Image 1 (cartoon, rainbow, N blue to C red):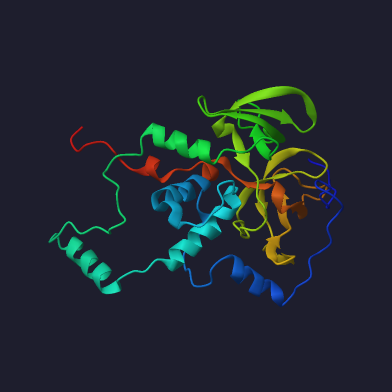
Image 2: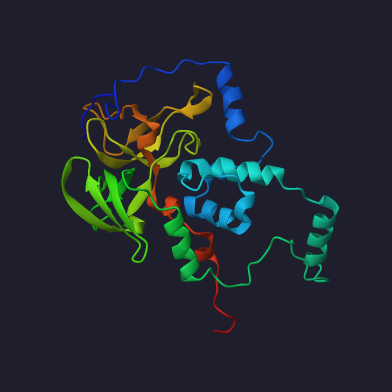
Length: 277
């Protein structure tokens, strides 16, 4: 089993149990629009990129924004969209009855997946910047602990590869494909709910291990910005001598989605095979 200390030392001094505040809920609502019923924070980063690419400059988000800020930007844009409800419902019913080829004005999907050049351009646009800390997969297997904390030295847009350095060993560069690098959270997006499968840095290490969020994250104000400063998780294979798995506090920056969620693209779920073939 892993070590049994219950306080994550990664990223600074030990954190104390967060206290409940009446202002936290209000701060959270300012971060994520209260009127949006959909939870865009549960979508994969590349899905949010697709939404932003589709609507272009209408989505107010910084060019250098990490994926953690995208869900809030998409939700705010979604909330501001004006929808003619009668036309929308009428068109939907007509479509069900086969009377029309009605489609929303913003729709452009023509039955084909985005071309590779469009995917490549999108990945280059949202690539991690030099000096940025990231999670990097440095083994060819999916064994627990194969993702480590690293810093980006360079991104090559033509080959979609990164040069990164292990935070524990800066003596050499590691060349990795784009699919082996994940950008880290800022703590402002709140995409990890209780019960969510994730990966987190184990205390006193720089490696990410499979885990599950074991308690609902608590929002706290950092200046004027609502943030989740730490996430409480239970790691796999972390039972103590009495077969109990302890709760461990990890800075929210060092908690990441499982790779299949982070790199998921909606277009890959569409069956593009013509009928009869």
